[in-house]
Length: 553
Image (cartoon, rainbow, N blue to C red; front, side, top):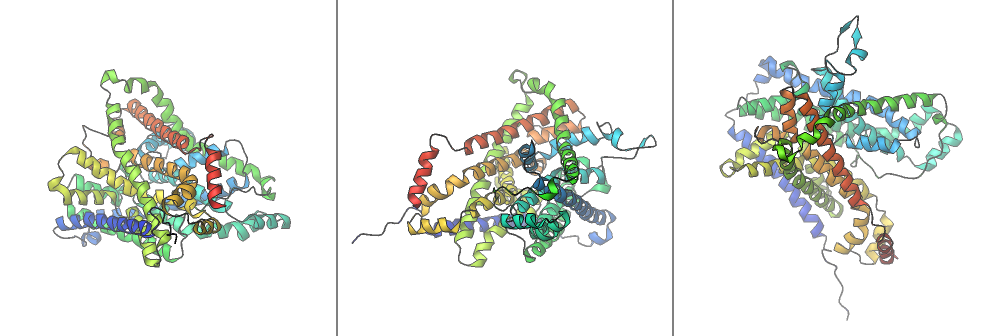
């Protein structure tokens, strides 16, 4: 009698338990971090929230700036996504989409230096955009600059996600709408608003959370105590006042606000995948894409492109003259040493975030219990509303007797950066993973293609590019991080973002531009390597395709 063949790693437990254990580890790390901070606190001064004008101002300003930033980002993103959906073939569209995708990983401190060069007191556009009777009423520092920078980062992300949702409207519905001659308003009401509405609560919550927990932007553009957010107040309490009680209290307030928002968003039936699978079918030419309204679309797209590009152009033009000198090994380059230090943190952080995302998604797909299926993915979003500064400080306090060497501190920063990147990496991988159709999976089951062979033949060819892109995102987010490293980094051993912040603080604008440009070059090189790696080799593609078809036929 022939014995049944069990492919390696085919038992569902190999998928289920690593993800669940990892989710428990995330919960444990977050609990240890916050718990250690609470343990060091003599008492939590919650009464100060009502009696201290400073703390009341910090909480109210954090909510106000995040609300304004979210509102402006969404209001700009929706018409932009509709314009891009109406016009799918203009020159440079694909490059603009890539730029919008990269906005998430553009280092905050670099973009801020570019925004200062454009909209600052002596900026390129300040005198032209904001003159009133010969006087300038615009001040980049304060609420204006914070909201502007948040819109710069979040409007492209929101528009890109809205665009994917609009492109996922079924093509038969598009054709029927075209045959009926529906105009712009009716198309919005019948097709586009339902697609946008499905992801709006989750996306607005995500943008609000990113703005609410923003650190580097408020640090550099805040302009004073009147524009302090919870994240910056936590940093000041930890770094300068060593007031663990106040830091813990502010962290609890931040977690309560963000956690409540996420709970409400999930309860309203938020789409679990903010980035659904993309549909590549060509849509029929739309009636509202050829009328006079197209000029408004072109104007909006051109203005938005300039809004994104001008700060980056400023950094490039300013930084080019100093790149060769700053990178010369003969001059004991500080920039080269900072680069090595940044890569030592960013590469492990990106790798850890991708592996963790795969394990969590694997557990989600095979868990029979709804609670066990949702638990890992839910806990993976915990870093979105647990302040990384609090997490890092708590872990530092918990590990302090054994945490003496600087390399151990860098390892801790890499771990926290990996946790911070995990929610975004999950969104990048989830869509392509869910796009594998059920019929293909049933055929694979019938042919007993399971375990390692299932991954090799079915998932890897489809996930090669998303995984490479996710790794690039994870490394890029850590490479440009100016959060945890600001708390733990030594001033004489800076990473690239810390070096850039030091140069901006000492008004070394030329050196800051060079450092910012070098960071941008590193990011572009990183994504170029990811694109090269994810490209299917020409010689092997027919063989691989044939192998897959042979297995599934």
